[in-house]
Every structure is written in structure tokens, then in C-alpha cells.
Image 1: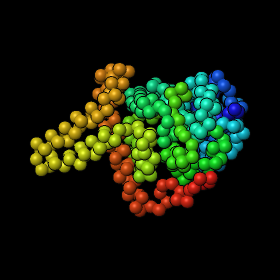
Image 2 (image 1 turned 45 degrees about the vertical axis):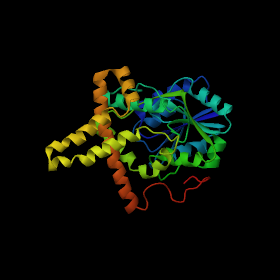
Image 3 (image 1 turned 180 degrees about the horizontal axis):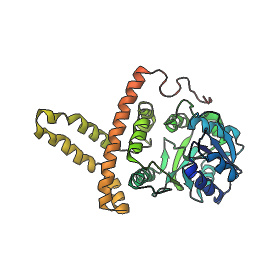
Image 4 (image 1 turned 90 degrees about the vertical axis):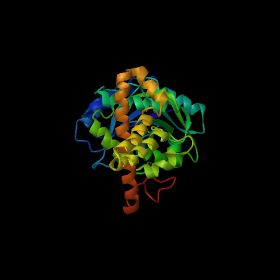
Length: 331
């Protein structure tokens, strides 16, 4: 199989070089590497051109969905390998993707996991994000209903059949695409395809990102809550935090009633024992306490984003996926 690598990029000059070097170091080399620059204002284009990639430039910023569609349209391989510009691949990633697709003809997409360490370690917040995503993905290896296209491969014929990414979506495009893909093909998550991710490294940025992405949860939930749907956060933990926030006002009636949200806070801390053991084993008990605190704040941001998303569903007809989007269309 001939492989085309498609890399969407917007102002990721910091990591694009590492991403491109990792592609050059693959045990199975692609026939082309296409960087779609989504109107960056940094030195991304220079870095991509210096690395010998084919660069396709957007005149205006159109989002990751449009960038991936542009990259596929410019490609000529039998397999499209998507990798985001803030991810560096382990050397066998492309070879493993091709092997798995060849072994399972009814598989429409195979995607990989993030390594347990950041691509560039910028502190404890980034370590939290990377550890959490690594654990969430590795414990769901196998057949799934959700693909993550930051590190994924699919036959070009499947992409052409299903259609492109919904260009109205700048996040949660994975979930919308997966809903179409799963009706015709299997989706497989493997820990034999590994990428090292440069995550958000400041807490305010992480909370804002969680809040922004969670606004599309009213649409994403259809895919994520299916049996076999990909779940980063356990439903139990989300429910406990929601109850904790709902019971906080009890303290206004009687301070003693703050014991209720306090008990729920304690329940949240032990809501996912396998995750807690994993973090403690990797980073120690002190970091586990920090990890749990950050995780609580991210759950609160998620719930706030969901609430905002529900409000937007009711008031903004342009919000969310394209209403007329069907299999075989690209926008």
C-alpha cells in the first residue's frame, strides 16, 4: 500500500519540525508528506518546506476539518495517514497502521495512542493531560465506535465513500465523522501505533480548551455514549462532580450541610481507582494529589461547557454540525 501522510497545521512551528522528523524516521516510508498550513502567522511554512514536505496553504484560517480535507484532496496514496502537527510518531507507527488495515479489510480506520510522556515537557499541567489521555486510550484498545484523527490511518477509498470532515466543526469533528464511519466499517484502536503529543501546559488554557470543546457535547454524546464509544472521563466521575456543584448551595441553609458536597468531593477522588493507581505508579502520591485537583477543575469546566452548549443548541441554529451533512459529502 502506498501511504500519504497528511498534517494539518496552524501555528505549530514549535513542534512541526519534530513531527516531520518522526515521519522521515518511519520504518515504512510514505510516498508523500503533505502539510496543509491553515494560514499560520509563525514560521511553520518555512519549517515544512525545509523538511521537504509538500505544502498546501489556505488563504484564510478554515479549521482542522477543512485542512484535513484539503490534504486528502491533494494526496495520491492508497492509505491516508493523518497526524497532527503537535504529535511525533514512534518509528513503527505507519508500518503498524498498514499491517492492521491489510489484516482487517472491513476496518475503515485504525488509530493509535499517545505515549505517557509529553513531546515537550512544559510542566505538571501538561503531564496531567498527557498521562490522562494515554491511560484513557490504552485501556480502551480494540474495536471502538470512535476514532481520533490526530493519529489515524484509513484507506483512501473509505474516505471517498464516507466523505470528508464537516468543515463547520473546528473541534469534535472526530465524533461526527465516527458516527458516519461506524455505520459501514469497523474502527480499531491499537497501542502499536504511538505518538508523543505536545499538550496544553497552562491551567487557564487547559480549562478554556475543555470548556470550548465540551460545548459540542450535546452532539458528541450520541457517539461517545454508545457501547464501545471512546470515553476520556468516566461517567461516574462527571455525575459526582455535577452533584457536588448542585449541593454546594446547601451550605447557605446550614454550614453543616457542606458535608454533603464534601463527601461527594471525596467520592470523586476515588471514582477511578485504575487511573489513580496508574498516576501514582508513574509519578508518585504527591503528584496524584495534584492530578486529582486539576482533574476536578477540568470536570467543572466540562460541565460548564456542556451547559453553554445546550444553551447554544436552543438559541443558535448555526451551532454544531452541518444539518444537511450526509455520507459522501465534504462540506
